[in-house]
Length: 95
Image 1 (cartoon, rainbow, N blue to C red):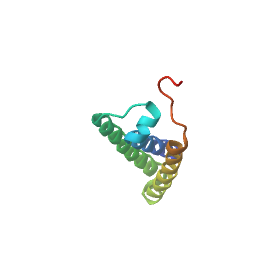
Image 2 (cartoon, one colour):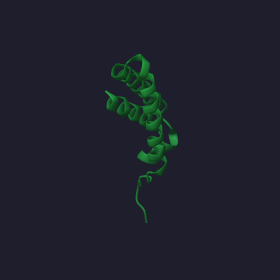
Image 3 (cartoon, rainbow, N blue to C red):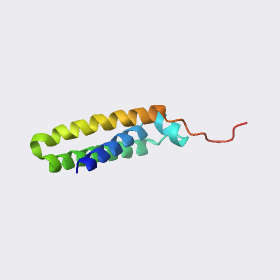
């Protein structure tokens, strides 16, 4: 369950990253529609909520929130570095 908490946190922050115009365009070559951004954000919150639930199941109410906060901070840092250091995708023809 600890790994599930971490993986769901990564998914959540990855979805938050795809909800931003700049990161989405950098990785896909186009800006997301407003409906798509809302869906990405909703998916991110759902993933973080499930991550919280899995942390509480794994460690109980005493240490589950602590595990969740740690997983969320680590996932946020990894996704932040990945989104900002990953080379942009090349779209279209280059001459």
